[in-house]
Length: 248
Ligand code: NAI
Image (cartoon, rainbow, N blue to C red):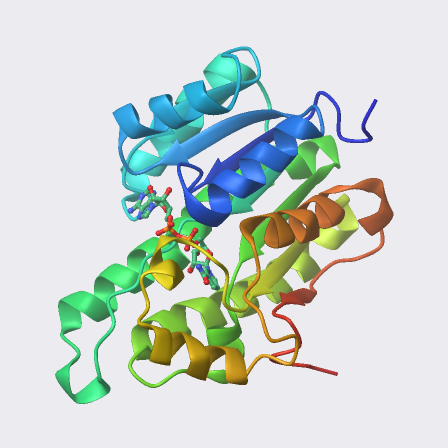
């Protein structure tokens, strides 16, 4: 039996891509999962594809809306019980060069990527502190570490997640709750699959390992941070990037 068996994880953005890989890995480790996506129907469908209803349930709503997050957390805990692990993975891009960036594009990316994680932390940190147990993992990005032209809004949201992670880690450490971030590099998803070959070659040239990562590579890092081996690790940013960024 896995070390994580029976624990309940809430994973945002679990319907596809990296989040779906995280949900699959958690289920393989005998966890139970509350899968959150933007649309209730798609979330329920993804949950149904990934496992039986006593192991994984789908919940849908806009995580950029604090009221919706309160409703999602209430529904998930009513159905499945206390959340042991929170994985803030949902994220969006609205890319534009800075001079063309619209305030709505800035606001929306910050609302979903950064405030979305904040709303879930607010709802779930207190019960974790009371139980003196719990793990939070925030999915940042290499772009939050080194920046990227055309992604000022996205980079700010992902760098913001790193600041949130470190500060919350300091506050929650005395209460037995750890908070860490995983910063993926370029991961093979629908987005990277659709890049033209020249763009893909240019991308690969900047990755020492010479290949893209897989959602399962990110999931493995998340599961490590949720597991007993990471008991003494908090406030850290774990890069999963093929050597693209190396931080001391
Ligand atoms: P994706 O676009 O394939 O999936 C995004 C997920 O987030 C979906 O499940 C969607 O329903 C959910 N979502 C989006 N907006 C939402 C909202 N307002 N409310 C509720 N759910 C919402 O994304 P992907 O590529 O799997 O990325 C997952 C995370 O990893 C994101 O935070 C992304 O920024 C980050 N990341 C991705 C990289 C990549 O190469 N794909 C690289 C570095 C970081």
